[in-house]
Length: 323
Image 1 (cartoon, rainbow, N blue to C red):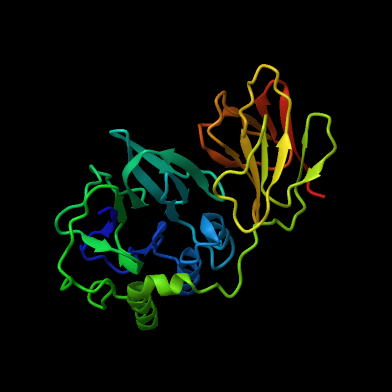
Image 2: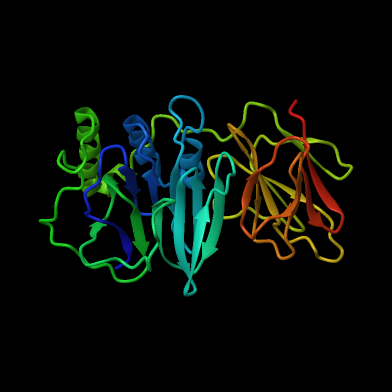
């Protein structure tokens, strides 16, 4: 049986990551993540109608409540990884190891990989090893616990007897008593995960930025980026669409350099994020003061005003100053 697991090794105060597991979303959040934020993320992750975008949109990335480091994965036929700060994902794909990290990108970095065999989420300084679950590792069917890192495997997962130590105890993590109690309660709630999946969050986050971001393709009229935008030769909406309806923008590509659905422009509270949707011929980005670079397949980058995005066949997307 596939699933998530984590090591039973004791963690010292101030270094324990918050590990979150639902049926489709798993994540590791840095030691500075407030318990109130974890409670909200647990509720959102367990609401299947919201999805990964809603969860990421609800993670504070600025201000006193900012979560500076995290690594989140949405597991499916393709696995989407989103990482920030000191968080990373070590992934085994096709017998090879790959590390997905933020690479200095803000507010976060995202990648979508297929044929994922297993992965581990946690801090950058962790040595990935071969990512295979050990006999002593504890399975985690659902909930929020403290730990050094979180693993997931598509292969058999050894089951530890139910007498295994509780996910969170005062002896393993010396933290605020109120925080320990809340996280322990979230772990107990995992036993009734299906029931909680029926609950709706009090408020659903909205991905729209309040800054009025705009873009223009070639000489066309500018358009607002007030919903996810998919640009391509014959664009279609991908699987993950979030709570708002997307907009499809078709471009001409006589030589078929542009993929059917080539890139996504997504508004976030921090600005616009561009994602290459595994295009055939790639995406070239020229950012103000940062030169020209070709995105990796599936890569996401923030695109400030003044950015030029070349998707082929003379089609250039310009990110305009916010109105």
